[in-house]
Amino acid sequence: MVVFPNAKINIGLHVIEKRADQYHNLETVFYPINLYDVLEVVEAKATGFFASGIPVDADLGSNSCMQAYRLLAQHYQLPPVNIFLHKHIPLGAGLGGGSSDAAFMLKLLNEKFDLKLSYEELVGYARRLGADCPFFIRNEPVFARGIGDVFTKIPLDLSTFYMVIVKPALKISTVEAYGKIDPRGERGLLKSVQSPIAQWKDLISNDFEDLMGGEHEVIGHIKEYLYEKRAVFAAMSGSGSALFGIFKEKVNFPELEEKYSVYYC
Image (cartoon, rainbow, N blue to C red; front, side):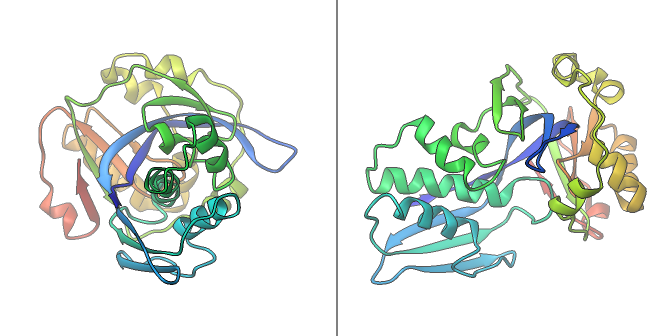
């Protein structure tokens, strides 16, 4: 059985406060995009994990797909399987690739072995795998609060636009980024996102872009380039390091491809 875990972008990200459990409350918008990994599961004599594409941690204990399998295996009699992951979503990019792989693994196992898990039950398992994982269970545009796992569905549709993802040769650790961030409280992100997209440039911000842009000049250079090429909106996704540009027309940037990893969605 084969599934295609997709990436997401964050449209704005505000860190509100640090919690007693050392996590942070935030507000952001998650939007799914058509940039995909490929995940296949087949029954086998012994469980194994096999990766291709972008190099990932293939350790049976730490890979997100294996973590999802082991989590469900604690509660259900799952047979041994071979897991094949072709990695296309870049790592350390703020695009949620690892979280998507884990969530899609839960959904795949639920369907393949007829576990009859409800949406709420799948979300419950996904929460145990990572803060972004629950989003990928339903996989629709949402305004997210809490640690990024409390959702309000929003009527956001960018299907008439074109999107470009640019990933510099820079991997930003989520743990390191949150360790440096200074929470600044609520700032009405939901209202800003509900404004016309032409106004987003002046209304929407990502706290991590401000932080990481000061440490890595390449982030600012890429964003400036995207706006020079008439992006309607451009920003860093999540805690980075990938940036996205939203365009009214289809674009192609071979000069960017010479320096960075570029994906057209």
